[in-house]
Length: 423
Image (cartoon, rainbow, N blue to C red):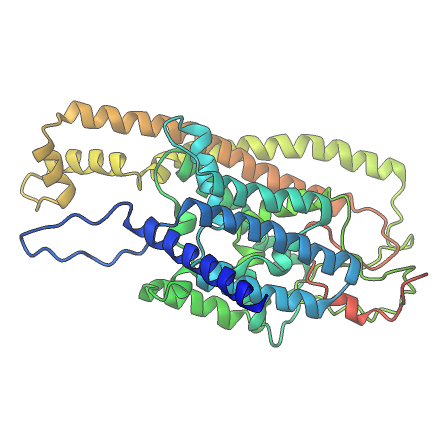
């Protein structure tokens, strides 16, 4: 029996590495006789399809396991060790790709460009954590995302940064999400991947700039827990929205809250809602109605202002697109013919394209950016409006509870609650 089991394990390992080798050799590098040296690629090696599906299976199993740990076992220790597994598997072994955060761009491009084929695994990594969040909260953030796991390791002395600063910095992920969708949908760039601070660490090939960026985040993470997750992560915006409507969510206490306040400062992410008593929340129905009417005018006004601002900025935002950049260089070359030619101008001249063709292509891109920038500006205006409305129309809350949107379900606060589960 033992020999048979050993043989089966060896066969499985052989198949595993055979598939991996096969995937790498599907598209061999071309041979050059000129002595050309192949540059080092920044992308991970190709992966066999069956192994890509195995990643999806691992994602589902890990999400199921950590959701059980958070909701049923209420185990912070279990969450921690699951996050270490995710850091090793999805981080260092899979080199941070495919990841749910970057998959936003794949999905955005597929929605606006019919010629783009969306990889099934990218769609799965985008959708599955959102589906889980809709049922059990942000357990993906608790211990499956390798970015979060890495930052959790350095959160030695986390401190509160206050409600106002949290609210202001909390707008950055929305802006980042909107820009990443705009640039992906217009085929400009995948900025989430380009400026990913941690992938370079996982692949051991970070550029100096990205190394400094990642190092800055990790050093600041000693005092401000998970700075990337809280103030930059665009996928966290979607998880925040879905978690607010989650069917079940982690609770601090397993039974009735006794208001002992032991959990009040336990959350390193400032995600515990302090009770709003009747004394503090003395607004009557008439006052709330007046504020509601006021916000019904302010929110649309902010959206219009934001949309107009986006319209004014659309040419600037489109300036990084290769076709718009080329058109600008072509025009500048005509104005200053003695100026040294760039690589793009040399390539344009050798391609045989006319100036009219270049300008026409740039015009199409600008048209897309005009629409996208107006929507982006309106979206940012809507966010400001909802932020103000949230402050003015705060609901009565009698207990210490985790904020369903901002809570990462890390289960730290559970250990602070002295209340035992009711039988």
